[in-house]
Image 1: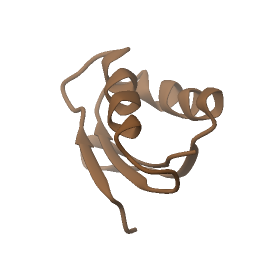
Image 2: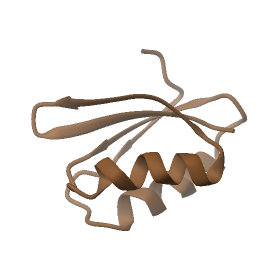
Image 3: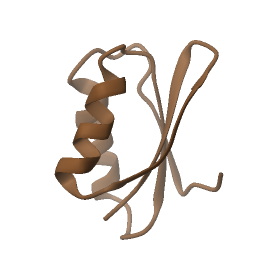
Length: 75
C-alpha cells in the first residue's frame, strides 16, 4: 500500500502511539496516508477508536511479525 509518511511507535505504551500519530497526521495534507507501526497491545483498540473519533479513515490494520501495522488516511 502506498503511503506519504511513516511513524515507528514500537516500544511506546498507551497513550503515546495515538498521541504521536495525531501529531504526525497534523503535518499531512487531507487525504495523505500515514503508515504506523506499534507493538502496544492497547493500540489494537486505541488506533481504530482514535480514527473514528477524529474522522480519519483506517485503511488497513495488520500484524507483521511482532508489530502491528496501521494505514491511516487523514480526514
